[in-house]
Length: 542
Ligand code: TNX
Image (cartoon, rainbow, N blue to C red; front, side):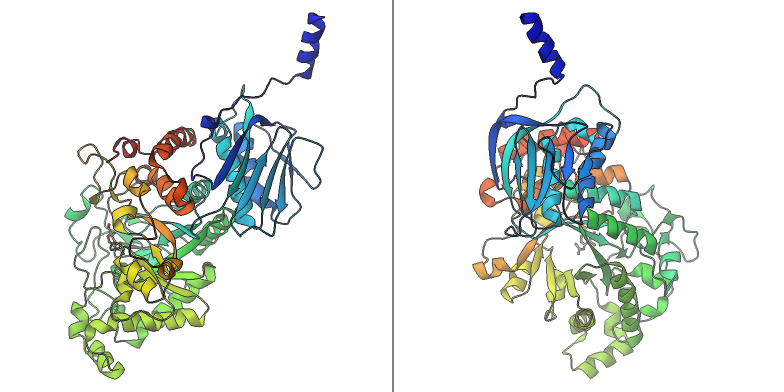
Protein backbone atom coordinates (compact mmCIF):
# COMPACT_ATOMS: atom_id res chain seq x y z
CA UNK A 1 0.00 0.00 0.00
CA UNK A 2 2.79 2.39 0.96
CA UNK A 3 4.54 1.74 -2.30
CA UNK A 4 1.35 2.47 -4.22
CA UNK A 5 0.83 5.70 -2.26
CA UNK A 6 4.37 6.76 -3.02
CA UNK A 7 3.90 6.08 -6.70
CA UNK A 8 0.67 8.09 -6.73
CA UNK A 9 2.31 10.98 -4.95
CA UNK A 10 5.27 10.97 -7.28
CA UNK A 11 2.88 10.66 -10.19
CA UNK A 12 1.30 13.94 -9.21
CA UNK A 13 4.69 15.39 -9.93
CA UNK A 14 3.98 18.44 -7.82
CA UNK A 15 6.20 19.21 -4.92
CA UNK A 16 4.30 20.64 -2.01
CA UNK A 17 4.08 24.38 -1.99
CA UNK A 18 6.14 26.69 0.15
CA UNK A 19 4.82 27.18 3.65
CA UNK A 20 4.85 30.91 4.29
CA UNK A 21 4.56 32.86 7.48
CA UNK A 22 3.37 36.43 7.67
CA UNK A 23 6.95 37.57 8.26
CA UNK A 24 7.96 36.33 4.82
CA UNK A 25 5.85 39.05 3.24
CA UNK A 26 7.80 42.17 2.52
CA UNK A 27 6.14 44.77 0.33
CA UNK A 28 7.47 48.30 -0.10
CA UNK A 29 5.61 50.62 0.05
CA UNK A 30 3.43 49.05 2.72
CA UNK A 31 -0.08 48.32 1.40
CA UNK A 32 -3.09 49.92 3.01
CA UNK A 33 -4.67 46.67 4.22
CA UNK A 34 -3.37 43.14 4.08
CA UNK A 35 -4.73 39.85 5.36
CA UNK A 36 -2.49 36.82 5.37
CA UNK A 37 -4.00 33.36 4.81
CA UNK A 38 -2.55 29.85 4.90
CA UNK A 39 -1.62 28.37 1.57
CA UNK A 40 0.05 29.51 -1.60
CA UNK A 41 -0.35 29.96 -5.32
CA UNK A 42 2.25 28.52 -7.66
CA UNK A 43 3.28 30.07 -10.98
CA UNK A 44 4.10 27.39 -13.53
CA UNK A 45 4.63 27.21 -17.28
CA UNK A 46 0.90 26.60 -17.53
CA UNK A 47 -0.27 29.60 -15.54
CA UNK A 48 -2.49 31.78 -17.72
CA UNK A 49 -2.89 35.53 -17.58
CA UNK A 50 -6.50 36.46 -18.19
CA UNK A 51 -7.44 39.92 -19.42
CA UNK A 52 -10.35 41.33 -21.31
CA UNK A 53 -9.10 44.86 -21.87
CA UNK A 54 -7.11 46.60 -24.53
CA UNK A 55 -4.26 47.56 -22.22
CA UNK A 56 -2.80 44.06 -21.91
CA UNK A 57 0.69 45.47 -22.28
CA UNK A 58 0.54 46.17 -18.55
CA UNK A 59 1.32 42.45 -18.16
CA UNK A 60 4.81 42.95 -19.55
CA UNK A 61 6.15 43.86 -16.12
CA UNK A 62 5.45 40.35 -14.88
CA UNK A 63 5.91 38.48 -18.15
CA UNK A 64 9.40 39.90 -18.69
CA UNK A 65 10.46 38.76 -15.23
CA UNK A 66 9.36 35.18 -15.87
CA UNK A 67 10.97 35.10 -19.28
CA UNK A 68 14.38 35.98 -17.90
CA UNK A 69 14.28 34.26 -14.49
CA UNK A 70 12.10 31.20 -15.17
CA UNK A 71 12.73 30.79 -18.87
CA UNK A 72 9.08 30.71 -19.88
CA UNK A 73 6.49 33.19 -20.94
CA UNK A 74 3.14 33.34 -19.21
CA UNK A 75 0.48 33.03 -21.86
CA UNK A 76 -2.30 35.60 -22.14
CA UNK A 77 -5.82 34.32 -22.73
CA UNK A 78 -9.29 35.86 -22.76
CA UNK A 79 -11.28 33.37 -20.72
CA UNK A 80 -10.22 31.93 -17.42
CA UNK A 81 -9.46 28.20 -17.18
CA UNK A 82 -10.71 26.32 -14.11
CA UNK A 83 -7.55 26.97 -12.11
CA UNK A 84 -3.96 28.23 -12.29
CA UNK A 85 -4.54 31.71 -13.62
CA UNK A 86 -4.10 35.39 -12.82
CA UNK A 87 -7.22 37.38 -13.68
CA UNK A 88 -7.21 41.13 -14.23
CA UNK A 89 -10.71 42.38 -13.72
CA UNK A 90 -11.99 45.94 -14.07
CA UNK A 91 -13.70 47.34 -11.01
CA UNK A 92 -15.11 50.80 -11.75
CA UNK A 93 -15.81 51.44 -8.08
CA UNK A 94 -12.09 51.73 -7.31
CA UNK A 95 -10.11 54.96 -7.61
CA UNK A 96 -7.70 55.34 -10.49
CA UNK A 97 -4.53 54.01 -8.85
CA UNK A 98 -6.11 51.60 -6.36
CA UNK A 99 -6.02 47.85 -6.65
CA UNK A 100 -7.26 44.83 -4.77
CA UNK A 101 -5.30 41.61 -4.89
CA UNK A 102 -6.58 38.22 -3.86
CA UNK A 103 -4.30 35.20 -3.90
CA UNK A 104 -5.66 31.72 -3.24
CA UNK A 105 -4.32 28.22 -3.93
CA UNK A 106 -5.79 28.11 -7.42
CA UNK A 107 -6.08 31.66 -8.65
CA UNK A 108 -4.97 35.24 -8.36
CA UNK A 109 -7.38 38.10 -8.93
CA UNK A 110 -6.36 41.71 -9.42
CA UNK A 111 -9.13 44.27 -9.44
CA UNK A 112 -8.51 47.82 -10.52
CA UNK A 113 -10.18 50.62 -12.39
CA UNK A 114 -7.28 51.86 -14.46
CA UNK A 115 -3.89 51.04 -15.87
CA UNK A 116 -1.85 52.11 -12.86
CA UNK A 117 -3.99 50.06 -10.50
CA UNK A 118 -3.34 46.86 -12.49
CA UNK A 119 0.32 47.74 -12.78
CA UNK A 120 0.61 48.13 -9.01
CA UNK A 121 -1.19 44.85 -8.42
CA UNK A 122 1.38 43.17 -10.67
CA UNK A 123 4.27 44.94 -8.95
CA UNK A 124 2.97 43.66 -5.62
CA UNK A 125 2.92 40.12 -7.00
CA UNK A 126 6.52 40.65 -8.09
CA UNK A 127 7.44 41.55 -4.53
CA UNK A 128 5.62 38.48 -3.21
CA UNK A 129 7.65 36.23 -5.51
CA UNK A 130 11.06 34.86 -4.50
CA UNK A 131 13.87 37.38 -5.05
CA UNK A 132 15.19 35.07 -7.78
CA UNK A 133 12.46 36.50 -10.04
CA UNK A 134 14.81 39.47 -10.50
CA UNK A 135 17.51 37.24 -11.98
CA UNK A 136 18.71 38.08 -15.47
CA UNK A 137 19.50 34.43 -16.20
CA UNK A 138 17.33 31.36 -15.81
CA UNK A 139 17.17 29.99 -12.28
CA UNK A 140 16.24 26.31 -11.90
CA UNK A 141 15.21 24.37 -8.79
CA UNK A 142 12.96 27.07 -7.51
CA UNK A 143 9.25 27.16 -6.85
CA UNK A 144 7.58 30.35 -7.97
CA UNK A 145 5.18 30.42 -5.05
CA UNK A 146 3.43 33.40 -3.54
CA UNK A 147 1.54 33.39 -0.24
CA UNK A 148 -2.24 33.57 -0.08
CA UNK A 149 -3.10 37.15 0.76
CA UNK A 150 -5.92 39.64 0.43
CA UNK A 151 -4.69 43.15 -0.20
CA UNK A 152 -6.57 46.40 -0.56
CA UNK A 153 -4.24 49.15 -1.57
CA UNK A 154 -4.48 52.83 -2.37
CA UNK A 155 -1.93 55.67 -2.48
CA UNK A 156 -2.02 58.51 0.04
CA UNK A 157 -0.78 61.09 -2.51
CA UNK A 158 -1.17 61.39 -6.23
CA UNK A 159 2.24 63.00 -6.91
CA UNK A 160 4.93 60.46 -6.08
CA UNK A 161 7.98 61.82 -7.76
CA UNK A 162 11.67 61.59 -8.33
CA UNK A 163 13.81 64.24 -10.01
CA UNK A 164 16.96 63.37 -11.88
CA UNK A 165 19.36 66.19 -12.74
CA UNK A 166 20.75 65.16 -16.12
CA UNK A 167 22.47 68.49 -16.70
CA UNK A 168 25.28 68.61 -14.16
CA UNK A 169 26.11 65.10 -15.26
CA UNK A 170 24.52 63.38 -18.19
CA UNK A 171 22.73 60.07 -17.73
CA UNK A 172 22.00 58.27 -20.94
CA UNK A 173 18.68 56.97 -22.20
CA UNK A 174 19.25 53.48 -20.84
CA UNK A 175 19.88 54.77 -17.36
CA UNK A 176 16.66 56.78 -17.53
CA UNK A 177 14.72 53.69 -18.67
CA UNK A 178 16.19 51.66 -15.81
CA UNK A 179 15.20 54.42 -13.39
CA UNK A 180 11.64 54.25 -14.69
CA UNK A 181 11.57 50.52 -13.88
CA UNK A 182 12.76 51.23 -10.37
CA UNK A 183 10.08 53.88 -9.93
CA UNK A 184 7.39 51.43 -11.02
CA UNK A 185 8.64 48.81 -8.56
CA UNK A 186 8.00 51.32 -5.77
CA UNK A 187 4.66 52.51 -7.22
CA UNK A 188 6.07 55.95 -7.96
CA UNK A 189 4.37 57.73 -10.84
CA UNK A 190 6.37 60.84 -11.72
CA UNK A 191 9.83 61.31 -13.19
CA UNK A 192 10.92 64.92 -13.29
CA UNK A 193 13.84 65.42 -15.69
CA UNK A 194 15.96 68.49 -14.98
CA UNK A 195 16.94 68.92 -18.63
CA UNK A 196 18.51 72.36 -18.50
CA UNK A 197 21.10 73.96 -16.29
CA UNK A 198 24.24 76.07 -16.56
CA UNK A 199 26.38 72.97 -17.08
CA UNK A 200 24.47 71.43 -19.96
CA UNK A 201 21.39 71.63 -22.22
CA UNK A 202 20.18 68.07 -22.66
CA UNK A 203 17.21 68.07 -25.02
CA UNK A 204 17.32 68.45 -28.78
CA UNK A 205 15.31 71.47 -29.98
CA UNK A 206 15.03 71.41 -33.77
CA UNK A 207 14.58 75.15 -34.15
CA UNK A 208 17.72 75.94 -32.11
CA UNK A 209 20.28 73.21 -32.90
CA UNK A 210 23.13 74.99 -31.11
CA UNK A 211 21.40 74.43 -27.77
CA UNK A 212 22.68 70.87 -27.86
CA UNK A 213 25.58 71.23 -30.31
CA UNK A 214 27.17 73.92 -28.15
CA UNK A 215 25.15 73.88 -24.92
CA UNK A 216 25.26 70.10 -24.55
CA UNK A 217 29.04 69.91 -24.18
CA UNK A 218 31.67 71.38 -21.91
CA UNK A 219 35.34 71.16 -21.09
CA UNK A 220 36.07 67.90 -19.35
CA UNK A 221 37.24 68.62 -15.81
CA UNK A 222 35.87 65.49 -14.26
CA UNK A 223 39.15 64.88 -12.45
CA UNK A 224 38.62 67.99 -10.30
CA UNK A 225 36.00 68.35 -7.61
CA UNK A 226 32.96 70.32 -8.72
CA UNK A 227 33.78 73.43 -6.70
CA UNK A 228 37.38 73.55 -7.93
CA UNK A 229 36.78 73.64 -11.67
CA UNK A 230 37.79 76.92 -13.27
CA UNK A 231 35.42 78.35 -15.85
CA UNK A 232 37.07 77.48 -19.14
CA UNK A 233 38.54 80.10 -21.49
CA UNK A 234 36.64 80.80 -24.66
CA UNK A 235 37.41 78.39 -27.43
CA UNK A 236 38.68 75.56 -25.23
CA UNK A 237 37.89 72.12 -26.65
CA UNK A 238 34.80 70.55 -25.15
CA UNK A 239 34.73 66.85 -24.43
CA UNK A 240 32.18 66.06 -21.75
CA UNK A 241 28.49 66.03 -22.54
CA UNK A 242 25.51 64.49 -24.23
CA UNK A 243 21.84 65.05 -24.86
CA UNK A 244 18.63 63.26 -25.71
CA UNK A 245 17.47 63.44 -29.29
CA UNK A 246 13.75 63.94 -29.81
CA UNK A 247 13.58 60.26 -30.74
CA UNK A 248 15.18 59.36 -27.39
CA UNK A 249 12.64 61.50 -25.61
CA UNK A 250 9.76 59.82 -27.43
CA UNK A 251 11.11 56.44 -26.39
CA UNK A 252 11.53 57.54 -22.76
CA UNK A 253 8.03 59.01 -22.60
CA UNK A 254 6.43 55.92 -24.19
CA UNK A 255 8.32 53.54 -21.91
CA UNK A 256 7.40 55.62 -18.87
CA UNK A 257 3.77 55.55 -19.91
CA UNK A 258 3.87 51.75 -20.02
CA UNK A 259 5.23 51.79 -16.47
CA UNK A 260 2.59 54.20 -15.19
CA UNK A 261 5.07 57.08 -14.99
CA UNK A 262 4.53 60.63 -16.24
CA UNK A 263 7.70 62.39 -17.33
CA UNK A 264 7.68 66.05 -16.33
CA UNK A 265 10.22 68.12 -18.27
CA UNK A 266 12.00 71.02 -16.63
CA UNK A 267 13.19 73.84 -18.85
CA UNK A 268 14.92 76.25 -16.49
CA UNK A 269 14.45 80.02 -16.68
CA UNK A 270 15.44 82.79 -16.18
CA UNK A 271 18.65 81.56 -14.48
CA UNK A 272 20.60 78.28 -14.54
CA UNK A 273 20.80 78.68 -18.32
CA UNK A 274 24.44 79.45 -19.13
CA UNK A 275 24.45 76.47 -21.49
CA UNK A 276 21.76 78.18 -23.58
CA UNK A 277 23.55 81.53 -23.45
CA UNK A 278 26.82 79.89 -24.53
CA UNK A 279 24.93 78.71 -27.60
CA UNK A 280 22.96 81.90 -28.22
CA UNK A 281 24.58 84.87 -26.41
CA UNK A 282 21.80 87.18 -27.61
CA UNK A 283 19.54 85.59 -25.00
CA UNK A 284 21.41 87.47 -22.25
CA UNK A 285 21.34 91.19 -21.51
CA UNK A 286 24.82 92.03 -22.77
CA UNK A 287 25.57 89.19 -25.18
CA UNK A 288 28.95 88.45 -23.63
CA UNK A 289 30.30 85.27 -25.16
CA UNK A 290 30.63 82.55 -22.51
CA UNK A 291 31.57 78.89 -22.30
CA UNK A 292 29.43 76.19 -20.76
CA UNK A 293 30.83 75.96 -17.23
CA UNK A 294 32.04 72.62 -15.99
CA UNK A 295 31.71 73.34 -12.28
CA UNK A 296 29.62 75.55 -10.06
CA UNK A 297 29.13 79.22 -10.89
CA UNK A 298 27.89 81.36 -8.07
CA UNK A 299 26.10 83.73 -8.05
CA UNK A 300 24.47 83.10 -11.42
CA UNK A 301 24.45 86.47 -13.17
CA UNK A 302 24.41 85.38 -16.83
CA UNK A 303 20.69 84.86 -17.13
CA UNK A 304 18.03 85.41 -19.82
CA UNK A 305 17.28 89.05 -20.56
CA UNK A 306 13.82 89.93 -19.28
CA UNK A 307 13.73 93.13 -21.34
CA UNK A 308 13.89 91.75 -24.86
CA UNK A 309 10.78 90.26 -26.45
CA UNK A 310 13.03 87.95 -28.44
CA UNK A 311 13.85 86.08 -25.21
CA UNK A 312 10.18 85.19 -24.77
CA UNK A 313 9.81 84.29 -28.40
CA UNK A 314 12.73 81.89 -28.03
CA UNK A 315 11.27 80.33 -24.89
CA UNK A 316 7.85 79.92 -26.41
CA UNK A 317 9.34 78.18 -29.43
CA UNK A 318 11.34 75.88 -27.17
CA UNK A 319 8.28 75.09 -25.08
CA UNK A 320 6.20 74.36 -28.17
CA UNK A 321 8.62 71.59 -29.12
CA UNK A 322 8.76 70.40 -25.51
CA UNK A 323 4.97 70.21 -25.24
CA UNK A 324 4.86 68.27 -28.48
CA UNK A 325 7.10 65.62 -26.88
CA UNK A 326 5.77 65.51 -23.32
CA UNK A 327 2.06 64.89 -22.73
CA UNK A 328 2.55 65.85 -19.05
CA UNK A 329 -0.02 68.34 -17.81
CA UNK A 330 2.73 70.01 -15.80
CA UNK A 331 5.62 71.84 -17.41
CA UNK A 332 8.39 72.86 -15.01
CA UNK A 333 10.07 76.17 -15.73
CA UNK A 334 12.55 76.21 -12.84
CA UNK A 335 12.62 79.79 -11.68
CA UNK A 336 15.20 79.35 -8.94
CA UNK A 337 18.24 81.31 -7.86
CA UNK A 338 18.27 84.18 -10.36
CA UNK A 339 20.69 86.94 -9.43
CA UNK A 340 19.46 90.13 -11.04
CA UNK A 341 22.81 91.97 -11.37
CA UNK A 342 22.53 92.32 -15.13
CA UNK A 343 18.85 93.16 -15.11
CA UNK A 344 19.63 96.15 -12.88
CA UNK A 345 21.90 97.77 -15.45
CA UNK A 346 20.31 96.54 -18.67
CA UNK A 347 18.51 99.31 -20.59
CA UNK A 348 15.98 96.85 -22.05
CA UNK A 349 15.13 95.56 -18.59
CA UNK A 350 14.73 99.08 -17.22
CA UNK A 351 12.42 99.91 -20.07
CA UNK A 352 10.36 96.84 -19.33
CA UNK A 353 10.06 97.82 -15.67
CA UNK A 354 8.77 101.26 -16.66
CA UNK A 355 6.44 99.97 -19.34
CA UNK A 356 4.86 97.34 -17.10
CA UNK A 357 4.65 99.72 -14.14
CA UNK A 358 6.74 97.45 -11.93
CA UNK A 359 8.14 98.78 -8.67
CA UNK A 360 11.69 97.61 -9.41
CA UNK A 361 13.87 95.20 -11.36
CA UNK A 362 13.32 92.44 -8.79
CA UNK A 363 9.71 92.29 -9.94
CA UNK A 364 10.84 91.22 -13.38
CA UNK A 365 11.14 87.72 -11.94
CA UNK A 366 7.41 87.43 -11.38
CA UNK A 367 6.73 89.29 -14.65
CA UNK A 368 8.83 86.66 -16.39
CA UNK A 369 7.13 83.67 -14.81
CA UNK A 370 3.64 85.14 -15.16
CA UNK A 371 4.22 85.73 -18.84
CA UNK A 372 5.31 82.12 -19.30
CA UNK A 373 2.36 80.96 -17.24
CA UNK A 374 -0.05 82.75 -19.57
CA UNK A 375 1.60 81.04 -22.51
CA UNK A 376 1.52 77.57 -20.96
CA UNK A 377 -2.06 77.87 -19.76
CA UNK A 378 -3.15 79.05 -23.22
CA UNK A 379 -1.90 75.64 -24.36
CA UNK A 380 -3.76 73.83 -21.61
CA UNK A 381 -0.71 73.13 -19.46
CA UNK A 382 0.06 73.96 -15.84
CA UNK A 383 3.21 75.86 -14.94
CA UNK A 384 5.28 74.32 -12.20
CA UNK A 385 8.24 76.08 -10.62
CA UNK A 386 10.59 76.11 -7.65
CA UNK A 387 9.41 78.15 -4.68
CA UNK A 388 11.23 81.29 -5.86
CA UNK A 389 8.28 81.80 -8.21
CA UNK A 390 6.35 82.99 -5.15
CA UNK A 391 8.53 86.09 -4.97
CA UNK A 392 6.73 89.19 -6.15
CA UNK A 393 3.42 87.41 -6.60
CA UNK A 394 2.59 83.96 -7.90
CA UNK A 395 1.20 83.49 -11.40
CA UNK A 396 -2.52 82.62 -11.13
CA UNK A 397 -2.49 78.98 -12.28
CA UNK A 398 0.96 78.03 -11.06
CA UNK A 399 1.88 75.01 -8.95
CA UNK A 400 4.84 75.31 -6.59
CA UNK A 401 7.61 72.90 -5.74
CA UNK A 402 8.70 73.75 -2.24
CA UNK A 403 12.42 73.03 -1.87
CA UNK A 404 13.86 75.58 0.56
CA UNK A 405 12.24 73.80 3.46
CA UNK A 406 8.46 73.80 3.70
CA UNK A 407 7.82 77.56 3.82
CA UNK A 408 7.03 77.84 0.11
CA UNK A 409 4.54 75.00 0.44
CA UNK A 410 2.80 76.64 3.37
CA UNK A 411 2.61 79.97 1.60
CA UNK A 412 1.42 78.69 -1.76
CA UNK A 413 -1.20 76.34 -0.29
CA UNK A 414 -2.46 79.19 1.91
CA UNK A 415 -2.99 81.20 -1.27
CA UNK A 416 -4.94 78.29 -2.76
CA UNK A 417 -2.23 76.97 -5.08
CA UNK A 418 -1.29 73.34 -5.45
CA UNK A 419 2.12 72.30 -4.13
CA UNK A 420 4.55 69.42 -4.42
CA UNK A 421 6.66 69.10 -1.30
CA UNK A 422 10.33 68.43 -1.80
CA UNK A 423 12.04 70.09 1.17
CA UNK A 424 15.81 69.80 1.11
CA UNK A 425 15.65 68.66 4.75
CA UNK A 426 14.13 65.29 3.76
CA UNK A 427 14.19 64.95 -0.02
CA UNK A 428 17.65 65.94 -1.26
CA UNK A 429 19.40 62.78 -2.34
CA UNK A 430 22.61 64.67 -3.16
CA UNK A 431 23.16 64.92 0.61
CA UNK A 432 25.28 62.45 2.56
CA UNK A 433 23.47 59.39 3.86
CA UNK A 434 26.05 58.09 6.30
CA UNK A 435 29.29 58.96 8.05
CA UNK A 436 30.85 61.62 5.83
CA UNK A 437 34.34 60.21 6.22
CA UNK A 438 33.24 56.86 4.90
CA UNK A 439 31.00 58.14 2.13
CA UNK A 440 31.92 59.30 -1.36
CA UNK A 441 32.13 63.05 -1.81
CA UNK A 442 28.64 64.59 -1.84
CA UNK A 443 27.03 68.02 -1.84
CA UNK A 444 26.95 68.20 1.95
CA UNK A 445 24.08 67.90 4.38
CA UNK A 446 23.00 64.79 6.16
CA UNK A 447 20.09 62.71 5.00
CA UNK A 448 20.15 59.14 6.32
CA UNK A 449 17.46 56.67 5.31
CA UNK A 450 15.67 57.08 8.62
CA UNK A 451 15.25 60.79 8.05
CA UNK A 452 13.83 60.31 4.56
CA UNK A 453 11.42 57.90 6.19
CA UNK A 454 10.18 60.66 8.49
CA UNK A 455 9.15 62.79 5.53
CA UNK A 456 5.52 63.86 5.50
CA UNK A 457 4.31 66.10 2.66
CA UNK A 458 1.57 67.48 4.89
CA UNK A 459 3.47 69.56 7.38
CA UNK A 460 2.72 71.02 10.75
CA UNK A 461 0.82 74.25 10.57
CA UNK A 462 -1.21 73.28 7.50
CA UNK A 463 -4.96 73.55 7.75
CA UNK A 464 -7.16 70.87 6.27
CA UNK A 465 -7.86 73.20 3.38
CA UNK A 466 -4.13 73.71 2.73
CA UNK A 467 -3.46 69.97 2.99
CA UNK A 468 -5.87 69.43 0.09
CA UNK A 469 -3.50 71.45 -2.07
CA UNK A 470 -0.60 69.12 -1.34
CA UNK A 471 -0.33 66.95 -4.44
CA UNK A 472 2.40 64.86 -2.88
CA UNK A 473 6.14 64.67 -2.52
CA UNK A 474 9.29 64.16 -4.47
CA UNK A 475 12.95 63.27 -4.03
CA UNK A 476 15.55 65.21 -5.98
CA UNK A 477 18.89 63.91 -7.11
CA UNK A 478 21.10 66.86 -8.03
CA UNK A 479 24.19 65.51 -9.71
CA UNK A 480 27.02 68.00 -9.28
CA UNK A 481 28.83 65.28 -7.29
CA UNK A 482 27.29 62.33 -9.08
CA UNK A 483 29.31 61.56 -12.21
CA UNK A 484 28.38 57.93 -12.92
CA UNK A 485 25.42 55.58 -13.06
CA UNK A 486 26.80 53.56 -10.16
CA UNK A 487 27.07 56.64 -8.03
CA UNK A 488 23.57 57.76 -8.99
CA UNK A 489 22.17 54.39 -7.91
CA UNK A 490 24.12 54.59 -4.69
CA UNK A 491 22.59 57.96 -3.85
CA UNK A 492 19.09 56.94 -4.91
CA UNK A 493 18.56 53.48 -3.43
CA UNK A 494 17.32 52.58 -0.90
CA UNK A 495 16.42 56.16 0.04
CA UNK A 496 13.84 56.19 -2.76
CA UNK A 497 12.10 53.26 -1.07
CA UNK A 498 11.71 55.31 2.12
CA UNK A 499 10.35 58.22 0.14
CA UNK A 500 7.98 55.94 -1.78
CA UNK A 501 6.49 54.73 1.48
CA UNK A 502 6.17 58.32 2.71
CA UNK A 503 4.06 59.26 -0.29
CA UNK A 504 2.14 56.01 -0.78
CA UNK A 505 1.39 54.44 2.59
CA UNK A 506 -1.14 55.67 5.10
CA UNK A 507 0.26 57.48 8.11
CA UNK A 508 -0.99 54.75 10.44
CA UNK A 509 0.89 52.10 8.50
CA UNK A 510 4.25 53.78 8.76
CA UNK A 511 6.66 52.34 11.24
CA UNK A 512 10.44 52.63 11.02
CA UNK A 513 11.28 49.25 12.60
CA UNK A 514 8.88 47.46 10.33
CA UNK A 515 10.24 49.35 7.32
CA UNK A 516 13.83 48.52 8.17
CA UNK A 517 12.95 44.82 8.20
CA UNK A 518 11.30 45.09 4.83
CA UNK A 519 14.13 47.16 3.42
CA UNK A 520 16.56 44.34 4.08
CA UNK A 521 14.65 42.07 1.72
CA UNK A 522 14.54 44.91 -0.75
CA UNK A 523 18.35 44.89 -0.53
CA UNK A 524 18.33 41.28 -1.68
CA UNK A 525 16.08 42.26 -4.56
CA UNK A 526 18.34 45.17 -5.51
CA UNK A 527 21.29 42.79 -5.28
CA UNK A 528 19.62 40.35 -7.68
CA UNK A 529 18.83 43.21 -10.06
CA UNK A 530 22.41 44.41 -9.96
CA UNK A 531 21.48 47.79 -8.48
CA UNK A 532 24.34 49.52 -6.65
CA UNK A 533 22.32 50.42 -3.57
CA UNK A 534 23.85 52.00 -0.45
CA UNK A 535 23.99 49.79 2.59
CA UNK A 536 25.36 52.67 4.59
CA UNK A 537 22.02 54.42 4.47
CA UNK A 538 20.59 51.62 6.54
CA UNK A 539 23.31 51.49 9.17
CA UNK A 540 22.93 55.10 10.25
CA UNK A 541 19.64 55.30 12.02
CA UNK A 542 19.92 58.68 13.71
C1 TNX B 1 19.83 74.10 -5.12
S1 TNX B 1 16.98 73.06 -5.53
C2 TNX B 1 19.46 74.09 -6.45
C3 TNX B 1 20.20 73.21 -7.38
C4 TNX B 1 21.38 72.56 -6.72
C5 TNX B 1 21.00 72.06 -5.34
C6 TNX B 1 22.07 71.32 -4.62
C7 TNX B 1 17.10 74.13 -6.59
C8 TNX B 1 15.86 74.56 -7.16
N1 TNX B 1 18.31 74.66 -6.91
O1 TNX B 1 20.57 73.94 -8.51
O2 TNX B 1 21.80 71.52 -7.52
O3 TNX B 1 20.61 73.17 -4.56
O4 TNX B 1 21.59 70.71 -3.46
